[in-house]
Amino acid sequence: MKKILSLVILAVFALSVLTACQSASTANKAANNSNKSAPKADEQGHTDDAPRISLADAKKDFDAGSAIFVDTRAEASYKNEHIKGSINIPAETVETRYKEIPTDKKIIAYCS
Image (cartoon, rainbow, N blue to C red; front, side, top):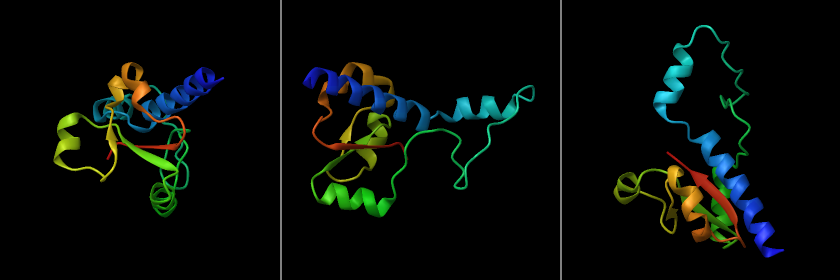
């Protein structure tokens, strides 16, 4: 059961990271492609289906110990500046490092 839960959490996390943290070059390629219509953004400008959380709710969950911040940027960016207490797992390494992510907490991934 714990293994299945871990795999489900990994899948949700990986999907969230991959959809929320598009690289700038991918976004630019999509914007420059005039043959395809651009996806419609929601009211806040998001064009993906990744779940969102407000800053206040994220901080509340983190402070309560029920959530962990996962910084999905490159290690150099993380070393330069990051949320205190967060862990760094760059988006391209999630598949090989997913076991480092706690399974008993809400995962809040960020990339900016």
